[in-house]
Length: 379
Ligand code: NAD
Ligand code: TYD
Image (cartoon, rainbow, N blue to C red; front, side):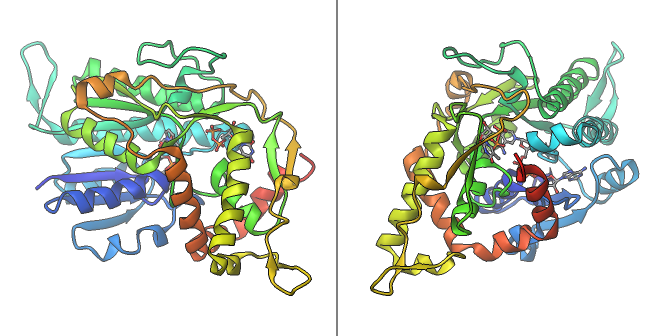
């Protein structure tokens, strides 16, 4: 039986990964380490926490004695490091927190894993490790910077981060690589494009637009809305991480992406259309609307859910124009391909939000409201 330390497992992608692992591997043991910042929520793992194979540990990846204690308490074979400050806009507001968690926190995890897994030293002085252990760093395509109209990020594209968030993720990647080279720690790095799906915190584009529509608020589009992201359904990402963890060549970087480029404005328009259509087809969904408008016959109207809600706001500083991943390495080596077409994934996602408003209400308490005001008032 393998034991996985999943850091950031109460966040968006980490929680989807925990759910996947528990359902795919009956014999696994999962230790979730999460600080439960604004982005983490135990309600996300409600079912998993009643599973005796899953243990939740609240703490900071940067806390040396806490993380060392976990390695003493559990026979950890794999570290999958999702824990991070993950939002570009927040990194523009407070870069230092991103250095602390994303860089120093990752280095702390690497150091403790190295010590816990070391069995001896080889004749050249390199540490040797317990059989079958691995440290997987969940990284982002944003480390490669921004693309023009053509081209794709491959694993050999030079690192060129532009935001404090991507600079911190790049630094973390370099430490992971350094531990792989200098101490021969068995590592992999995955670099993924933008994820979407259930349990996505509504500070990010897709869940924020859904939330605002349900509240009858304006839909803020940065700049002129032509920036491009390469969207990947979160479960497809989790499958890729599972494959890299178990089959990836030690020391390698794998890009994970869906060949699914969309301009932000296209996404916003698609969400508007889809919510209107879903509510027309399934009138019960209208119950979740916070703003209720009745037509002359007295039925709830959804005609107001239209493109007039869109408002173009001040652009993000240093806004990367385009991300697009070339996933041919992970496809050729590990047979991974994205399975969820965007058209299906976005409807699944929107339906999930319509059916899980309690989760949204739980995670978007006081801190979120203050954040929203700070970020969007007078933008
Ligand atoms: P998220 O913000 O939803 O979740 C992050 C989780 O980490 C939260 O549960 C939070 O409580 C926890 N956390 C934060 N600081 C911590 C600390 N110091 N110690 C322990 N736990 C801490 O993020 P996400 O979208 O799930 O992203 C997960 C990882 O994937 C991140 O490393 C991110 O850089 C990377 N990534 C995300 C995307 C995306 O589209 N969301 C794309 C590529 C890569
Ligand atoms: P986001 O979801 O924050 O992810 P990332 O910055 O990591 O790509 O943003 C996705 C795109 O949507 C990005 O180009 C910024 C844009 N955006 C808006 O136009 N309005 C918003 O309110 C947000 C949060 C993002």
